Length: 336
Image (cartoon, rainbow, N blue to C red; front, side, top):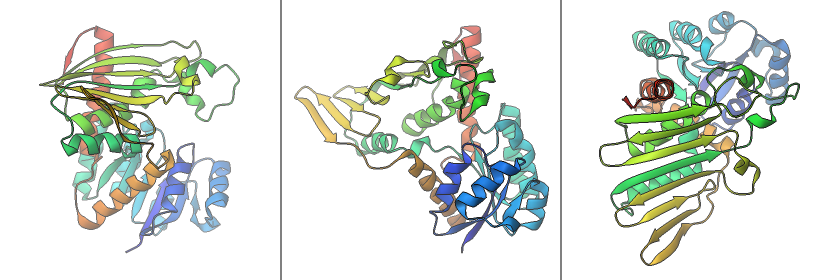
């Protein structure tokens, strides 16, 4: 079966989705919808869509286009209404992260899809990064001892250069009241859960460093599990992001060894005998994560198997995101 896809949204992230759909042997892009005719035509020309496949109205696309899947790449505040419409039309749904601006809307979308009998998965692609996959492989291999501490750090120099008037690919970042922990925290908490399971408690410190954004751009989260604890350290305002060092890393301490995995997937094991490089850089680019995620989505539709990043699963990630904001606001530990 060749799955026919209709995409709603032709903005910044749609390029990643469109590029990935063009690499799927079991899917074809059959329709594209966006309110902005200029963006719509630009993406259509780039990805070979004909005029009759273009829509400026989602209702019309859902009624007229011959599609099986709706891929939603619009902002979070639009997701509930679009999921409702796609589910009512009997289409399976892939929805861009952040899934929803609050838990109530996320839970409603889960209920809508279940009642309509359609599958709903969130485009949470970070766990398909080569470095994250490498950490998972090593954890599952039994190479490590009993974990007692883990650290996940990510840094870039992004918000301090958002000077007024400077063109940005995502200019709305400047005005988002919840920024780093919401926009990127969904990635990081999903990765943490993917690797270590469900936390019991979190404590967060969140703040704004750049004068050019309204929301948070620096955050530190202490995460407690039953048998170990860890730290997520994140910044969009770090000068480390201007260096040649890999800016994303994992460091895991156990009772018999330690693991260091850099952003390119290079993994090193440290123990009493010294340092051993388990592997060098792993092949794969950021764009490839969308290809692998879409393939997982299509496999799930064909076999009926569970999605790794189902809407139900993403509820747990969102709970951690919103708990981090609550913790930072109230200065308390949040039990999750």
